[in-house]
Image (cartoon, rainbow, N blue to C red; front, side):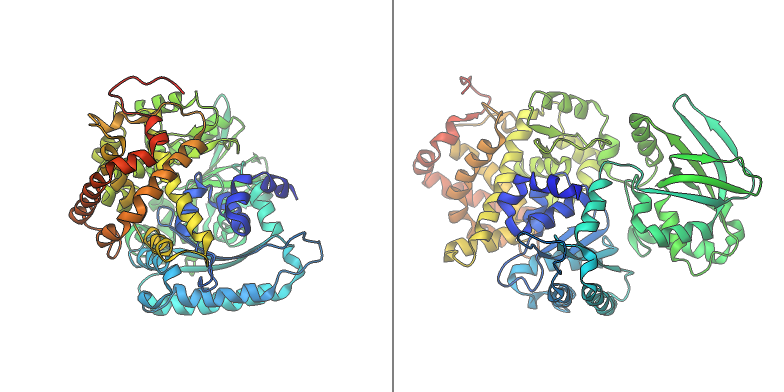
Length: 585
């Protein structure tokens, strides 16, 4: 197993997350999560009252959620069985996740359940995965598949009862050695499917060539697309920024329209549809029987068309425009993928990644060997595991929250890159890599402070438990980022003329910066969380309430300013506020 050595080298996961480290490793591989620590802070639920949910991960920006139970065998042997009862535990998890009244859900998982249910209700989530993650061979215990199959049936019934107007796909999956190995081996590949296909075409087509690519343009039967999607599922879209998002209200209503069109007017489908673009290793159009021989396959544009066709009851004689592209230059492949998807509602950061500010910021980050900032650009090469990866969406959220708008930062994550006004208010001309590091290390410190409180269970003191409950509420992280921003003058003990100039004097060791911020959190959070809770309510919704709460905490801090500054002397001395020159440490 190739993945095992890579996983064992992930001391950032193993040391901090212990038994949940493999679960997070698998999650990161599967969904290409750049900042797994930030995701873990929101998603991990593992504890004494987690109701068989170790993790509830909600990602409305890609339309999926994951509910997971994990098992780690110490010194596993090839013949070891994955415990069947752990798979059946997902039935309990499903019952709580789809509870009729989220207020009845145990406190430990309540906020995650509310977030998931709200995202399903507003149409942001179309697929819910239930994972049983373990480090054993999947074939050893057939009882696991039986349990997962039963759980999937029960979950489908529960979600149909709770959300009768939403079309939600439930997928139960055993994520053992074989699946994790597959995800690892394909994590750096654009084309996951390496099989060969005899593709039925309209017996017409033409080839066109560029300097570093060639393509064959034709039309394929919708029945063939339906067949391969039912076989390969999401692997078919390994080179695509998005998987199939399902069909339903809001952003998925286009897919519902595709299903209706192919069912009602199959003869006209070719004329109505924009078609599909696929990357392949090679093709051979020399056959005279209308068949095209294709080796390797990923659909880089047309995931929604393909998925919608697969969900249509009948496709009759419908034909779909398609072009098969062969290209071995990774930079051109990335450009092909990007340009083929610019007309779609994919990640907005993809389309901002080449603006002047993002290019400059990437250049500024080059001098920090242990940090990586993509500026929204997704490439074929994964950053080194030795680098700290700064997720561009978390960067935008953290900057906006710290500088005054935690409500928008929390509720409009995607809009921060998509909306011109919001984007311009965050990624200003004077924004530097050093300021991003300053704010991002605070965001990471909040994640780790919460993790430390979580791992103290059941030994948490009453006050520690209250802090943990606060940090587990929806929007708490963004609210506390905003509050720290309001308190910075009290912490530093002098006027800050421009808070966008704040940075550390030495940014060479990110872990040191995080530890400095953890001391700030330990000083401020115990005296502030009770005053901040009123701004959360049912999530972080009111700018007026958040401003009132943050200002109140900043006022309290002034009464303890001398004490706080003494406690945080090391932190204060490490700050460069931009108003005077400090020697390098």
